[in-house]
Length: 80
Image (cartoon, rainbow, N blue to C red):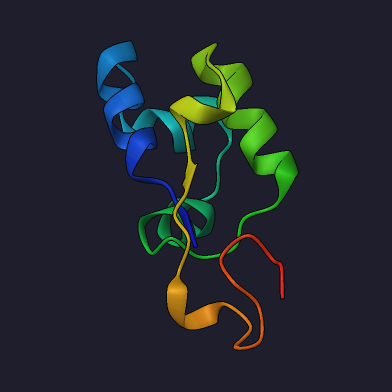
């Protein structure tokens, strides 16, 4: 599962509000809503956020494995 919790801390560190992302940088309110729900956003959106915030991908998102989504015949590393 991809989580965007780090984005909110990075925004705070950079002094950029969600309102400013929408009004000054053209990020849609829908994209902000998807990020809040940890839903799908395109790599274009991630690229745009990293450019705006002058940060790395790791400052915006993180991957957390969901054991319930792992295939039942493979271990967590993908081996049988």
